[in-house]
Length: 196
Image 1 (cartoon, rainbow, N blue to C red):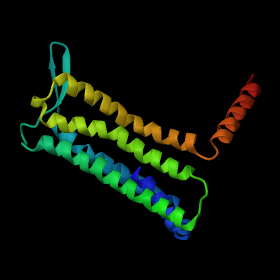
Image 2 (cartoon, rainbow, N blue to C red; image 1 turned 180 degrees about the vertical axis):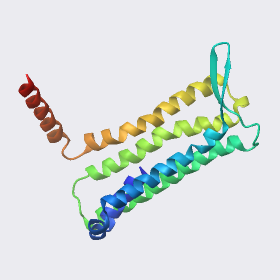
Image 3 (tube, rainbow, N blue to C red; image 1 turned 180 degrees about the horizontal axis):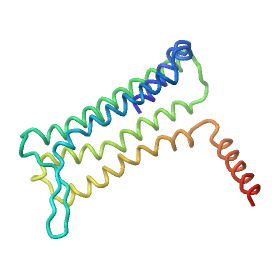
Image 4 (cartoon, helix red, strand yellow; image 1 turned 90 degrees about the vertical axis):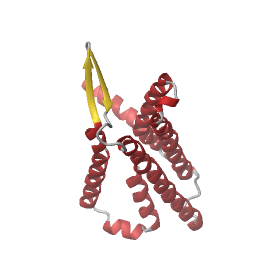
């Protein structure tokens, strides 16, 4: 999401430069770097993750006994690098885009602003519960285990939902939603008729 928002920002603020310098090779490099960064975020969970089996019950848990600040590392680092910093970058990029579009009067349509607002809100709403419950888990002795467990399940589901929510927002809020959906349905029906 950060890469997409930065790409949109560069395309709007520097359209000529973007047209001349954005290449498929550079896109591949950025995607690979994003994946490497995402993989590196999971390394602490690999280090501290452990499995306990007893009476046909298997429990996955994090063992922080070897490193006293391990739980903070696994909890606070993703909050900063996976939520706070991306949220700030996304808001910054879309704010610049909105200012650029408004000052240049490049668009009379309010849909781009609605799409950008919806994307930022979706990111915030989907990821905030997960990080709140992960932080609450740091002091798990002060909270009801059932509430933490349920909150983490819901938070994890909402965070995962953000991955499919963004494309849906682009499609449903895009300018050509009605035409694109109808044309795709007509195309699918034509293919179906041909095969029957």
